[in-house]
Length: 246
Image 1 (spheres, rainbow, N blue to C red):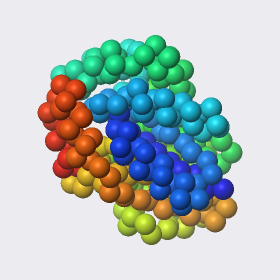
Image 2: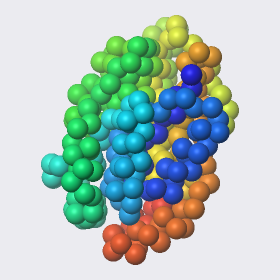
Image 3: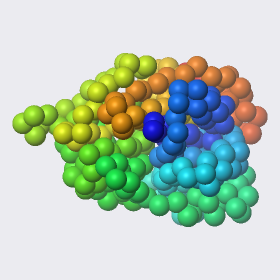
């Protein structure tokens, strides 16, 4: 039963729909949304409604820092991001805001842990950006597999034979074996706002039966997504990021 792992949609319905379509065609039977459904993008209502429907069908859905900022103003965000959050707060209907508020910070499911940032103090929104931080997150998760977003990159951290943690940069579309005798943390990438110089949407597919994980990058209509950000009057920087993947 393959699991589609999608994070950091950021109000980008074009990217979300492309990833959901690809996941279904690739045989995904379960779905996990790892936070930051909103922020930056012009379609928060449609994104939240789409994910809420999947949640009703049994999908996992986790709270991200942008989701939390809709209900609790975040002083640490820059001015452009705060502007986007204020716009999102006005654009979302009450049921959408209530859905975001209801989301948990972390869910454990058997050998898997789903969390937006680090499983060590998940509400502090620490970035998992080194093997040492990945190790702390996995030890707090207490599971074989930990799946996270927040960093907008696709990276696989793993525990070596001597207990040393390392990072692996996967090739999109190439399955990676992730045997259960080791512990793993996968940063699944950003659906709606990748930042590696490529605008292609990112998501990940995990096959627990075969013990393998595949990271994907998908072309989608990012030009329309950027145009809608400009039409909504949101900061130009957010449209530029969607266009250029930076």
